[in-house]
Image (cartoon, rainbow, N blue to C red; front, side, top):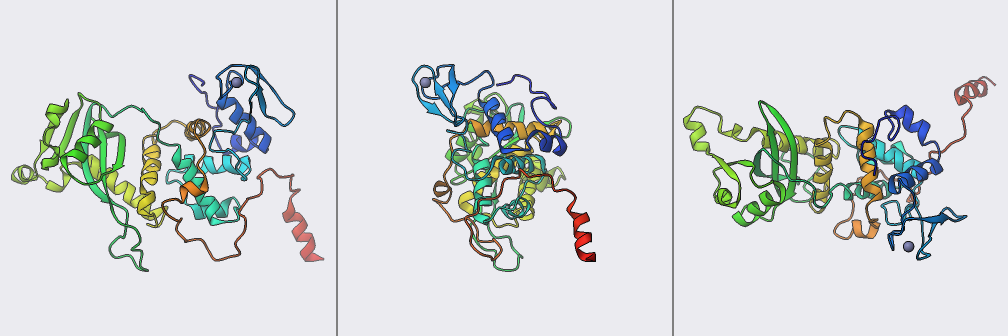
Length: 354
Ligand SMILES: [Zn+2]
């Protein structure tokens, strides 16, 4: 892994550089190889460093003789989607502040089926949570709220899925800023669930601000400085009791708006946790100097992650059938690798005049 990745050298700074660097599927494969083995091939089986490249592009370990491809054991393993398409999808996923819906991805990259586009986005979401990542520190607001499901007042029977009780934790940066956030579904609002959420996501020693709900009682004996804010107290002091936990409420309204906007509210309760991961990934990188760096981090996680099969993705639930009607195809998109097109608009003029 590169210690300090540099823009323009280790990751592209713009769409222009993206196109120039990754013009062919082979360029993309080489980048994945570099990301995975920056200091040269290391055998995934026996961890021996060193081997040779075979005629088909795979590596053979010099120690155990096992053969492996660059994409084996990554989310790109045995994909039928060309890497140029994957890379462009990753760029869109990482660079757009609102992310991208499966339908937009399908249309933009000429992906034959909605299901393929949907599964690509789900594979990307599946890599976004690193086990053992750091917990939140400093001053952290914690609250629980319902997310997803039917929104009142929506036409067209969007009543699929249920609302999911969700724990939200947000770092407060004085005087008025927000730091990182974490989000996870909760079984219920009991002390057991809420305490588990806090210890999973907030570093002991932090100051945890909650409302007066009894489920939060006892946090001060669990290693936190507990700052309980009571609605009654706020009302007595003439403050807006709804603004008791402004940071959490800001983040909750952002994810709700994102689900309704980018995904038109059509997110299944079973998949909501992975959408939360996507939201948190993007939120925590919202001030990143370069969108290219976010793209780089995403690919770095992707080469480090076991593949998810379509069958596993849909094990719990079918993707939403919001795909436009049309012939069912295999859905394997063409590579974005193309011959120069020689200004087809000029030829079109000649055709119509003739
Ligand atoms: Zn080996």
